[in-house]
Image (cartoon, rainbow, N blue to C red; front, side):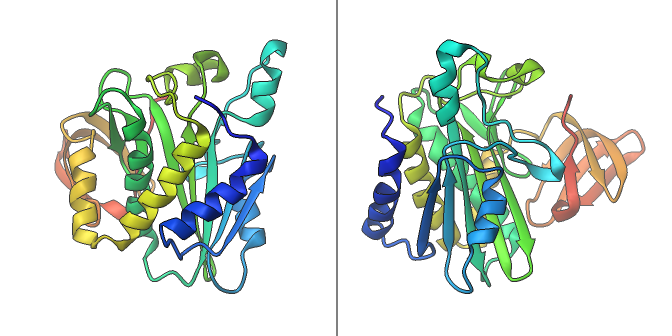
Length: 273
């Protein structure tokens, strides 16, 4: 694997977008460092057209429900060069007046993130999706490899994706090492730029796909059905066996009190700490 210099990324991204006729993105910004690509994309967005912001390193990345997204750095001085350039993909697309609803975009982005990661691994079927759009290992500890954050700000929709690419175990701080994993750790030899370009292609494809097919593909990758989980909806916690997930309709959980159906779009998974 050869990691292309950051200075070459913008030209490579723009050439890729032209070659694939991906028109939802009209502007590309590649930053060496930013607090959050979500905030940078929001600030850079224009009155029309899509804006892509990619960061070599985030200092204040965030995930769903206010969680922190750790891109990964190392305190080892010998690793300072690797730490300073970042280890993952951090990208946000800002769309103005999108025709697709945030829930549909969330599912499409989750599929795209999975599609960006899975082909780089030597073993097929390694990765799945955890409600609503985390890319995780299908088996074992089900460590997280990528996450998606979709936000609405007025007429602006922000689609943020973070993917762990080059990390080693020591690059994840503390207990996160047991809950996160990278493409490199799972056997990938691809660069961050290769993963990013595939992400853009997969997102374009998913956004052009009929919603019923997106839902079916998402369901085929689901890892939660058949497991015991805790969900939260309208401030109330529900613990039990996940019977089914209809991503645009409801989540069915068998609790001690009986089977309950929770609205998918406003239900969140409670993660183990």
